[in-house]
Image (cartoon, rainbow, N blue to C red; front, side, top):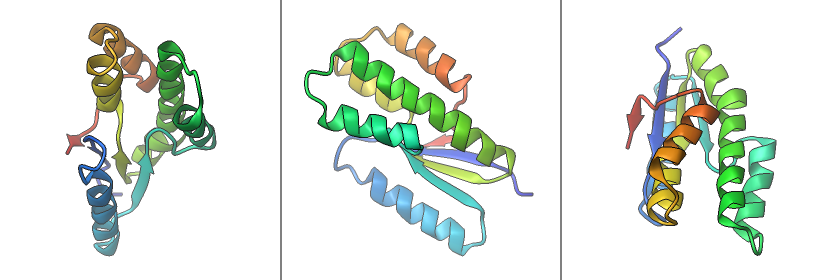
Length: 132
């Protein structure tokens, strides 16, 4: 078993993060690494449904938006990320908790300490090994 790693790509829309995350996924697989590639919001059946709701929903309040993102993250960490890390995989994630800090915190004015506490709760304090 190789050493697991949790790598997150963060950035604004159109910054190239998804392109770079996908490129790293392909490169690591070609080198023989076991890799799980995922994204936020989404990455699980529930997360994908929540993603569509938030992206296309009308009249979604700020608290509703926040808790849908957090619910998606909780499922992703519990069902995908932690199990993959336990198997020794490298996990590449397109967006994670820093996006919530940026968009809902700085962008929409939600208290940063509240966001940090909620993120710690839903991720069981999981922190990426590397954020790009």
